[in-house]
Amino acid sequence: MKRWFAYTLFAALTVLITAGTRLLPAAHAQAAMQSSMAQSAAPTGKSHGTFTVELVKPLDSKKLKEGDEVEARLTGGITLPNGSEVARGSKVTGHVTEAKARSKGGSESSLGIVFDKIVRAPGEEAPIKGVLQAVAPNPNSEVTTGGYIGYGGLNEATQKPAAPDTRKEPTPILNDQSTGVLGIKNMQLGPDGVLTSSGKEVKLDGGTRILLNVTM
Image 1: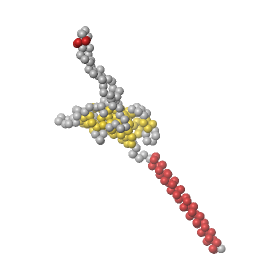
Image 2: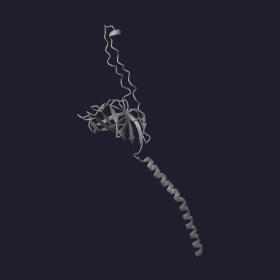
Image 3: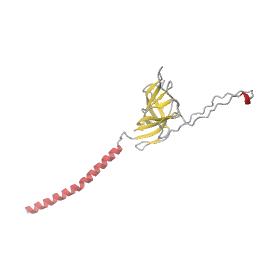
Image 4: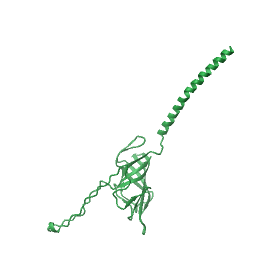
């Protein structure tokens, strides 16, 4: 009887150990899957991308100071890392990191800007870190007339001066590979995203296009 009981107990333990061994890899696999899903769902802070904005108002380093707000808007719709859509024209805000006019005897003026958030709708904001990667003029700016003045009553064939050439150079269009300052004279963009100019101040017109290198 004791031998039969011992044999039965041994057999039962063998079955339990075997079942536990088979279940262990499945449990580990499930835990690994849950961990992977949690990591993919959690914000990593390492999602990178680029998109273009246009300035809402002109900027002048002579009139700005560190901390002043800068407002722009998306030139096209984008998709955030979480899959949500942000429409063209949505507001993107940032702030001035430095603003300096060229001092007497100085060599350059400077303007630094960082963009902080996208405003999808009132109360719906997505934080970003947007550093300037490229800058170009407003491609929709009006063509100048050149200030031509007519001379009525005179022999136009011999007296009217030649009208100035008002043709404009094609305005550069930014793309994901654009870098630096395109189509704006005497202005450079440093690797830190700070604009510098040999002029008295750094000026950017309203509508200036800026390609941002964005971390979310």
